[in-house]
Image (tube, rainbow, N blue to C red):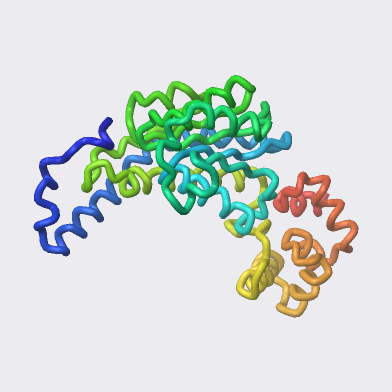
Length: 294
């Protein structure tokens, strides 16, 4: 596995000046970003298929072990506050259980039984999307989870940093970012981990955009859970409609903080009609606005 290989270039790394060590680590991070570019078509295909299943009520299921599992959980947990994605549409399958998020659990990644049990316990079905993340691409827990999910008709996405990895043939949508050897041999929290996070960021953000949760580059579907986000909500209403601050504040209050509804209210549409227009537009603000002139 290329991610486990030792590089002669860095054999005296610990004797280098700190500035040179940092430069080497920084270059590794840049290389990991570049490695993702070739994966863009695969990410696009996976996201387009995922949108179809999520529109039918599916869930996003993240599966992984160690660093890879934690990166998956991080991506998923950011979707509710950013895009108001429902918590009950997210499932996390972490080798070793949720406790492994904070502390390493020995041998957890080797458990095929646990991977299968996690998919069965979550009652994964055809509308679900299971995303398995593994730098090596050979993690038994993650491969078992994907294999079981695929057998149940779910969409399966495998993300790996090693060409020819088992996970890439165990899923319906393989995504490879060949990041190669690490500066610190085998430390896949570095180059491999960075590439994994980028892939997940790109995938989930594209999915949310395609689901209508972004309008004109704005997070119009976010949860305003603090003062900063409430202010951002008002700014979005102002930017989209051109109204003044007072109108935006009143519209948001009437819409119970929902930006999309508040936009329509700020444009002079009654609350009930605004909600109906969004409902008939599949909650897509762009569609709802385009229908105003019809």
